[in-house]
Length: 137
Ligand SMILES: CC(C)(COP(=O)(O)OP(=O)(O)OC[C@H]1O[C@@H](n2cnc3c(N)ncnc32)[C@H](O)[C@@H]1OP(=O)(O)O)[C@@H](O)C(=O)NCCC(=O)NCCS
Image (cartoon, rainbow, N blue to C red; front, top):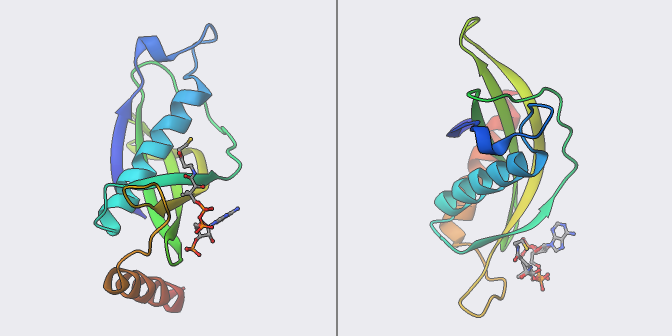
């Protein structure tokens, strides 16, 4: 997967139980996914169409570093399906632990908000990378 961003859990982002709000994590995933999709499609105007189920497997506490990774799993005409993963970094063990993951669909839109095709050469290159990855596994 590709590293996209690190988020640090701040005091204002936790609830009474001391855990990060789930909604904050969703916005981190969405932002990272949109940044990744926008970069790959060379387009800032990618909108979130869909987010799959998200299971919060481990809590995130104040000052935890959360690293977000992403990879393309499907290239459509105007859409990109991206797998996004959040991992908590344990500084003592120097290892990452999965917090949650999901699939998200982003759509490229024009100035009127209508879906438009992602550039053909970019789609071809993403499809090539997908094929290469499938052959390696
Ligand atoms: C994104 C949006 C422009 C798509 O409009 P639309 O009329 O459904 O457009 P289309 O029918 O052309 O579909 C666009 C793409 O979404 C895909 N799509 C539609 N429904 C889907 C679904 N349930 N799951 C996965 N992909 C889906 C289509 O297959 C198409 O992809 P493709 O071009 O790669 O084949 C429109 O739904 C929208 O503006 N949504 C709000 C986005 C937003 O504001 N998000 C922020 C959160 S509120």
